[in-house]
Structure formats: C-alpha cells, structure tokens
Amino acid sequence: MTAHDDIRIGTLVPAHERTAEVIGQLLAHGFETFQISFGRTVGSFDVATLAHAVQRVLDAHPVGPHDLPRRVSAIGVYGNALTSPETVADWERLIDAATLFGCDIVSGFAGRIPGRPVPESYDAFAKVFGPLARRAEEQGVRLAFENCEKRGTWESGDWNIAHAPAAWDAMFAAVESPAIGLEWEPCHQLVSFVDPLPQLRKYARRIWHIHGKDATVLWDVIREHGIRGGVPYVHHRTPGFGDTNWTDLISSLRLCGWRGSIDIEGFHDPVYRDALETTGQVASLQHLTRCRGSQFVPNAF
Image (tube, rainbow, N blue to C red; front, side, top):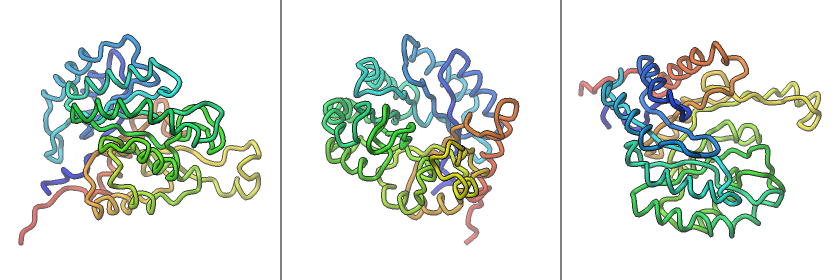
C-alpha cells in the first residue's frame, strides 16, 4: 500500500454545464475523487465534451494533499432500465464513455417492474443487463447497482430491486458476469434497521463503489409513533453526522482487502444544506479522512 491509495475519499457532482468548474473549486478542499451523476437521464447531454472538460481540470491539479492522484471514480444514471429504453441507451452511452473520464465504473439502479414484488423483475433484469454486462466486460467496465429502495418494499415499488441481499444474490445468479456489482452505502440499510457492517463484510467482493451517505434513526419518534404514523423517523445525513461508525466501516473494508472510492452523496442532510451544503461536505471529508487514518506516515522500521 502506498499512502491511502486503497481507499479514496471524494464527492458526487451532478452533470451540468458547470461540472468541471465545480470540481475545480472543490479540489482546494482536498477531495480526491469525483463521481459524476447524470440523474435520471443523460438526455442530449454532450458526454464527451464534459469528460474532456473534467479531465483538463484534473490534469491541472493532478495530486491531492495526501499525495493521491485525483480522478473520476464513477459515472452514473438513475432511471429505470426495465421500463425505459431511453435508460438502457443511457447505460450504453456511459459504458462507452467511461474511459473518456478515466474510470471503469458505471452506476445506477437495477430497475424494477412497477408495483410488483421484487422476484417478478429478475427475468427482465437478466434480459436488460445481460447484454449490458457483456458490453461492459468488452470495455473493461464494471456496473454498480445502488442499494437505494426509492421508497419501495419487497412487495411493491417503482425504481429499484437492488436494495436487499436476497435480491443481490438473485441478480448475480441471473446475470453471471464479473462486471456486475453494487454501489453500496450504509444509509439505506439503516433506514431498514439493518446493521450495515455484517452485510458489508459479506458482500465486499461485489461492491465496486461506496456512497458516503449516513442516516440518523430517531428512535424516540419510533417509540411514540412507529414507522407508519406519518411522522418522519429517520434523516439521511452526510458521514460524521449520522449513526454509522465510519472507522469500523473503513477498517472492515481494509480487512476485506477492498480498494475503491467513498464519494460523499450530499444534498440530503436536513441540517447541512443550502448555504451549509459545502460546509457539511468538507466536514464530512475531514471526518472520513480521520476514520481512514489521517495523514499517511511511512514506516520507520
């Protein structure tokens, strides 16, 4: 291991006309990697032009404060590929464009047949993502499915089946490809009252990318109102402000030999938002850096 090159810490940046400029401003705060998200659709966005603009900024500031090369960790689109041919085309475009960004991960939702139990989407998942996985393999790209439930349950939902271990196992069986993996974060597990660490240790070998997002469970609200009483019982948080022990999480990753990026997924925290958005993200970066071991110190023996 050289410095902290096994686990990089960065942030998620939306794709728009100012993406490269935003990344340029964030570099001064010490972010090491950047995931670029196209939201629900790539649309008519000029992906190649964006990639070149981002690379110019990174090439001008190639190394961060911990002597780690800056880079794009992943690019993503978050539509429902099981119902939208446009989303399938978006996956194809981003798979083809990944090398332009200098990355090998394309992320998004696994999709879902709306209103139906999770298992009823497995055949459609295989039909859509089997060819996409082959396309990714041919180009040395990996596909990472976010573990967000998008307010869905096992019985019904509109967007994503990849939010529970039983679904992950079925997805890996339906598309037997080394390109298929997860974009994981502890937040969505905490929302479902799952201890994220045993799950992380079990699936670390299939996790390609991690979102730095946390959650605070309001147990006092649950004790009074339950989870169906119409009162919010959980807040999505940036790391350092929620319930996850990120020191234990990063230690678990290192014990598993995991390598990759933890990119902060902002714009969810109910406190550090609006004028405090970047303040919260930089505080989160500093927290995750401490949990990773702070400044790397070469051995003297």
